[in-house]
Figure (cartoon, rainbow, N blue to C red):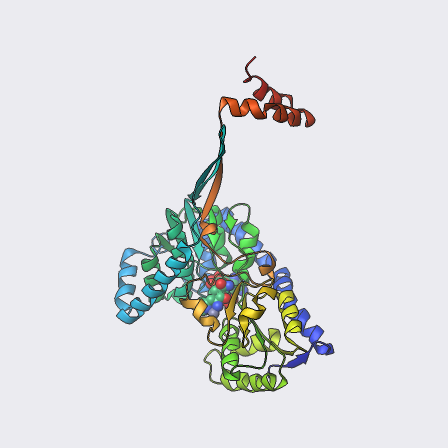
Length: 430
Ligand SMILES: NC(=O)c1ccc[n+]([C@@H]2O[C@H](COP(=O)([O-])OP(=O)(O)OC[C@H]3O[C@@H](n4cnc5c(N)ncnc54)[C@H](O)[C@@H]3O)[C@@H](O)[C@H]2O)c1
Ligand SMILES: N[C@H](CO)Cc1c[nH]c[nH+]1
Ligand SMILES: [Zn+2]
């Protein structure tokens, strides 16, 4: 049973601690495993990948089979219905259109006649995208990562996806084809992240790794940061629903379960100012849980990291949500736009009673790769910015340098850096 708690209940603090430490404590236990895996891949390359994939994904890989072949892609495409292809294409088009709006242009400013300044935007050369595939296959995650990379102009997109038991998911490969992924490797978990970060004989080293994954993937990304860039920590899914008593309990329960079914470590929370709604959602969750094929996963997530919280009013609910900084925040209230400005931290905000989180997961357009574990306090959703980098442009005329030279020399002398000062003074007209 999903528990109904008030902020003043002693049980509430205990549950809040579990929820907040979900992202902190587990890594301590698992970090050593991930470190060992990364070190092994660095040292033994492909051989380590073959052994680890056999161990964790029950798949026998060789140099010949580690990469998905053109023939495997053709077989997959033949197995996908026209309707599924059309659905994936619609999603890809909407994601591309949304992300195209995020494009930043190279600019040069001529505010000062004798000094030209600007910023050049360039796509990354090679990006690795992690597509989860342990407990479920995620064609949508292929699109959410690869489409923006291609819109940004990334030359080479390398995808890794685990294929447990050697099973190839045709929809994942179809999504990769639609999105224009360049190469696909049958790798998952920390070993896939390590291969992308350091490169092996088979897997090319990338400049940046993006994409969500389970706790092993999230920690591996954290550990290789610096060797490569990463997007964010996008770990086990989360949803927090703020409700004012309006709306439909069955809809709210369905939205909570839509994230709980991802992972035992997922978190689903309702904060409502209505006791009637709290009880109705509690009943609905129980009813709907029993109908889910992934009931065991969803139930554990609900028991361990779920809660229905009874708030005094909407302000109390919003304050709590800002503390959690959820990956997905649903404002299931009559007038969501009236409270939007009070929301300080959330990966994505779903407004009103007709915007289920699942619409954002699949095809609304915004990215579904979002910060989790409270990191929405400082991380943003995956966006076009993740696939480009910028160079500053500086161009002085002789007169421009003359005009600003005294201050440059002055600051160089303040720092005691003589050669810096001289590099300017040597150019000045006597
Ligand atoms: N935030 C987002 O945008 C987003 C999007 C989609 C999915 N998700 C999340 O991604 C996750 C997907 O998880 P998943 O497990 O289905 O797939 P996954 O691909 O992330 O993880 C599977 C891999 O984990 C590794 N692994 C499993 N058990 C291990 C162990 N004991 N030791 C070492 N390695 C081990 C294996 O190598 C396996 O290949 C879920 O938590 C889901 O909520 C998040
Ligand atoms: N809700 C996930 C992000 O946390 C994304 C996803 C993919 N498929 C279904 N859902
Ligand atoms: Zn989802």
